[in-house]
Image 1: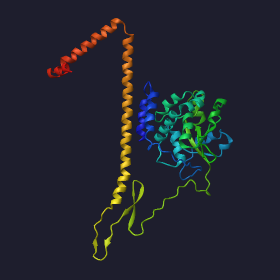
Image 2 (image 1 turned 180 degrees about the vertical axis):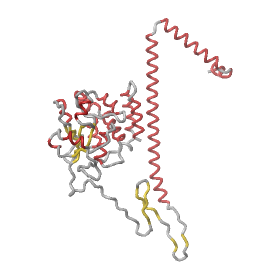
Image 3 (image 1 turned 30 degrees about the horizontal axis):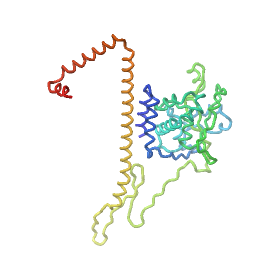
Image 4 (image 1 turned 45 degrees about the vertical axis):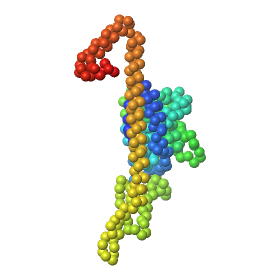
Length: 360
């Protein structure tokens, strides 16, 4: 679903009035309340060698960060342009989440609270509308705006860690903790590190001697075997006491399947009937999903029609501007051409169609 929405947003970012189109799409997505439920984010805090891989290059850069994080471990995530979102997914331990979902949610947050983010960061990292244009494009590199937006999307504080390489006072904002709007003492904090996929020497060599980050990785504390917070408890399956059941797997979900009973006296199998409650439950499960898909399809169609209408309006405005700027001779020439095109169309019409047009 979010992949489809991100594709629409990416198309809108290519338009000349990209901001208006992106804002319209985001406002339409906001009406899908079932799609924008609060994200349950319970971040992992400790390194697990069975799950995580160490990013050796990032670990070297980490030695040039502030002392309070140098004991942490940089975790390897895909460097595909979605590394910020990959880092969040890594810390969540929830593989069901996707970069597209987090990117769209961040974009909606920025559009919805544009003034807040503009007043806070525009003087440091540029106008928010340019950032919104960039975020709408999948696999585009992330910046400070997205870190600040994600803290509110996830309801989690984010500590941004930046290495002291070619450091100046303007970069102080990069070494900062971004607190979400409902921050409290109980709020959790995660660490994200600005790094590079190449060593410092190679990075400078390919950038005219300068160094700037091109990658994000999450930071975790060293593993602590006495704690088990990094391991998810296995769900327990309980069966019914009276009816024989067996556990089966469907779509990675354990389900109890009813087994028909046999008549011990006559050694005959009783006809197996599906209880009406099962049918009702099935309908209750599938119907909302179907409705949501239909609603999403309608929203996508509405968004696409909005984009088409924007393009038509732009075309009409361009034509009006051309007519207004035309000299009398050019205007007359355009009228002559229009009459010739109209005559050519009429000549190709059949007698019946021509009669219909005259009647209309």
